[in-house]
Length: 535
Figure 1 (cartoon, rainbow, N blue to C red):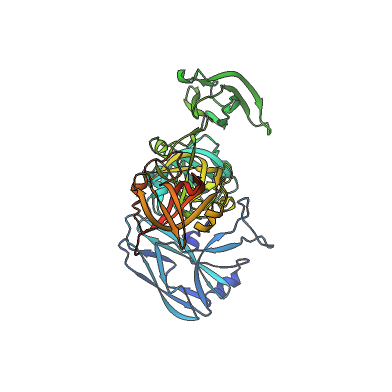
Figure 2 (figure 1 turned 90 degrees about the vertical axis):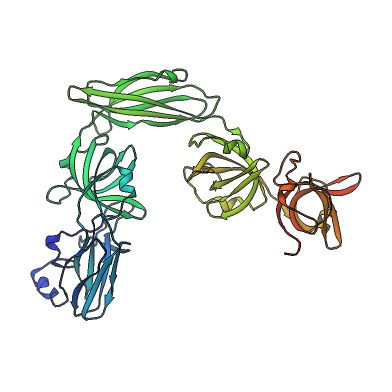
């Protein structure tokens, strides 16, 4: 969404919503009068006042041009741009923001800042509007990386150099610029007159471009708005298709380039030669007939191990310079079973997937599926679970019917956040075993099968504190618990002592109906929760 920035030279003008005429310019002076249309707030945050006189109700807003799903501006039946209201910048405070006809004093204030920043607002009164520019500090463009822009304040101007990775709109010049630190969205590219003149810049994907412009954030997307182009270094090698994912069975991919230098060169790293080979190079014209595409066929062998990544450098050069590009091939691997402890010991990876099974605990988000997965070796946070493998969380967790205490098998990556390990990917569902809530009496009456029962009772006759053997009492009914562990395990791991359970405590556990010597008992039980006696 492009912010509607007005030139300072036009800031004192008043515009009809449909058109601008001489008659309207005369009438607006009776509608809205400002003592200043350019407000400068000191960097120390001191307040500045502006006198406003209006003969109708008025209000101050920030606006953006409305866009359709394709990113094009929406216009009304008369060809005028349609605007929608957005929040005022967080750094700016204005009081009051609205009022009745009459004379008013507007107070503008902001937090102290070391960097210059600016925004453009609109005052509406009686169907008319006036632009007003608010600036704090001196607007001086600072050389920065993409990451420094992402981390920097809105309103500050930056000079950034990076590679054009995608072009979204050629009417206004909307495109993406990336360097080794990250990627930012360029929302509008203007020439020296402030006009959108995209073809004059001759920017293509792969070119190295230096731009200058102010930062804003819209719907969480960081943008440089209406940038000026400082320089364009034309690329001799443009990437058309260079990123691929291949199954563990292997196969072929075709990397594609537009070569503008003297041929295409590549160097297959020796460590890749055991599973990567280059088989064929061909050329053809693209669909528009504007470029000759050089296509390279790359063969990928089968993979019996973990996922792996190949990076193959390509280049093209001439007497004036050279350009490079990298083909990246990610090959899926075997999904291996891991315990929580084994996963915790691994390094983070976006491509290696592992299968884990454990108890679901502490569900913190039922929309995305955030919870702890606990097995006999430890606990790890699962940052989202989907019903099937997805690129991003599709909010299908609720459809799985998973509850705390269920035994869940999932597949995910070893991830981390702020140094804390977690399961990422997002993780996706394999299977789960639910449970049935029951009283002790109901468990006693149940058949011996694979049903898991969630039972609550009082701990009595604790005969073994190593394995966790005791009687579970619920009213007049009692059943023997043959071992209790922290999480579901194949054999008792002697984790009972870590639970801190004592006689008289109320415990909730999940286990199966079993028997020994004709006497009923609960077997394979694992911990859900407990309350100490007297609490």
